[in-house]
Length: 322
Image 1 (tube, rainbow, N blue to C red):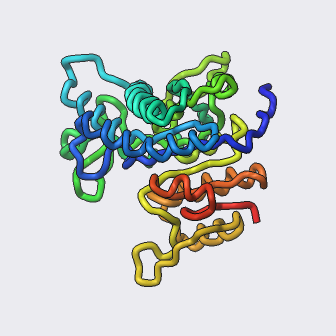
Image 2 (cartoon, rainbow, N blue to C red; image 1 turned 30 degrees about the vertical axis):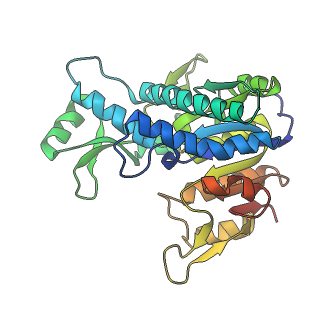
């Protein structure tokens, strides 16, 4: 059994939302993704220059969607790419962009740190109820006739998606452990900046003989980042999203921004269904679990520009024990 990690009060796991690299409405050319990544790395570079140890995680929804679209168009011409492998591929390609941009940003600031990408395998429970209730749409839209043929041929679950067409749905199991956590801790001890758990990591399950096998599913990036933060002794979990603060009655005239919440308040607002499951809900759940695990921890939800001020209590929403 792995020992409990030593807590590092200056270690922050920063979870980037998908819009940090590919924004809504963009075609997704890599030049544009690099430009967005450079912009996002400014704040993380500043965080490192102020003396924080940093691990970066990131979403990959648009990138996996594009990759699966390419796979779909190449059907019959090249071997099919399983979703688990597509997750690993985008973890590597996006990690390359983030690592390069962050290293260049630090060099410009006179900081000499190595940056490394670790595509992480994330253990899930093969008996997780989510495995039999696919909830995450991935890949392209299909006409109904084609969707039914794919369901018969491949055993996929396909459903009508808001009358826009039929899409494949996969499971979104809960992250139990990070397989590479010891390696990540070792890299941090050696002074590396680590990029890992891209897209929530690659879900794997433990077989009866102790081996691992891939699972075609999608792990929520924020929950995986929370599990990672607890696994490596991080004291701070920062979840970067598109808004500067969490709000009650978001988008309504009575919108109320929240600079701080206790775990009890966050749970109360969660029960009031203030945080939709498709957007802010998983972020709040990740924050609650992270702080509950150690009352000294704090979780912050903010946008890229608010990252550094939020750590000083000047921006964002901070979730604390009480």
